[in-house]
Image 1 (tube, rainbow, N blue to C red):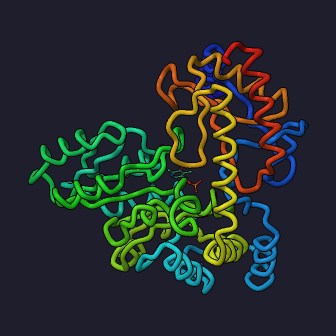
Image 2 (cartoon, rainbow, N blue to C red; image 1 turned 120 degrees about the horizontal axis):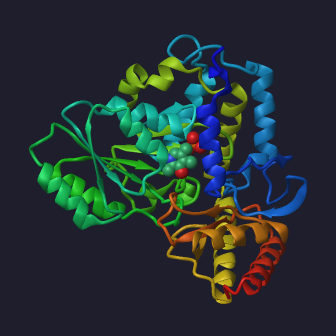
Amino acid sequence: MSNVHELNFLKEKIQQLKDDGVYRKLPVLEGASESEIILNGHKVINLSSNNYLGFANHPKLKQAAVEAVEKYGVGSGAVRTIVGNMDIHEELETVLAEFKREEAVMVFQSGFNCNAGTIQAVTEKGDLIISDELNHASIIDGARLSRADKTVYKHADMEDLERILKESHDKYRNKLIITDGVFSMDGDIAPLPEIVELAEKYGAMTYVDDAHGSGVLGENGRGTVDHFGLHGRVDFTIGTLSKAIGVIGGYVAGSSTMKEWLSHRGRPLLFSTSLPPAAVGSIIEAVKLLMSTTEYTDRLWDNAKYFKEKISTLGFDIGNSGTPITPVIIGEEGKTMEFSKKLLENGVFVSGIIFPTVPKGTGRVRCMVTAGHTKEQLDRAVDIFKKVGQEMGIL
Ligand SMILES: *Cc1c(COP(=O)(O)O)cnc(C)c1O
């Protein structure tokens, strides 16, 4: 009898995680994603979601989801290239193109599979992908699916990027520079004007993953490209519909040529069922809401400034974020996880982020302030940071 079904090779790896002190269980959220939540049975202030605008449980979005379900049912029934491309999917792309101020938008089922599908569709053997070293995992995986050569430049380092562009000049048919618009671990904004300039100088295309910039930066949250006034100069702008927009999905904004091609070669579009009607209905409502008022983005930035000011006044190191993402840098890995654990015990949930997600010795808890937080909740969170910081000798 073989014991192959015991999966002993995995059990050994799991034991290794435990020995390394990095084993964990998934936290369980009881109820909606709100600024104050019940997590694993305890009431805590939520400083860990990507629900920047508080849309994930917004009554208008919920109503739109219900209406879409009544009219279109719960599933789309097929991939978009067969019979799963409903008129609301088309409407969503029209609304998103207007929002992003681009010619066309192609929607995918998530930000992750948007990167997985798009990068490989627009590059091939004989091309070069040039990627910021801190780009998101879905970009790294997406690039792996491409037959193009790949190289990495030092984070936001324009000299290093130019060196690569110079050295690869004439050696490749197409070059594609890929960067996050906003880097999720530090909250810093990519130097897009410089990147675009270098791209134009050396004849490269640009690809910006704006998962943390859309709904946050730019006019009415139009994103990093809008923030810098670079419309028409970035070839592929990726956004997610799961963070600020509060639902699920991803998209590429750009030219209609891009869209035409992806409708033939974007593999997640061809081989995975399209977004369900409830999601599509609520996303359309979210984007219309964003375009109609700056109420949500204003409150997001107001809360972020309020919280950052208070936390840095206490004496914490909050890095150099240019967005509501607020890293509180603790340093050593064990101490960072201890800090996060103590915050949770005292009523604030902020996830600890350590090596290898960030460089060794730069462990931090990453605070995600949203439009949904009240000043009272933020004050309470700050008090808890102060208490735990003093107890642990950080302050
Ligand atoms: C979150 C994130 C994604 C993935 O988006 P999902 O819609 O959650 O799949 C992709 N890229 C970046 C930069 C992200 O931060």
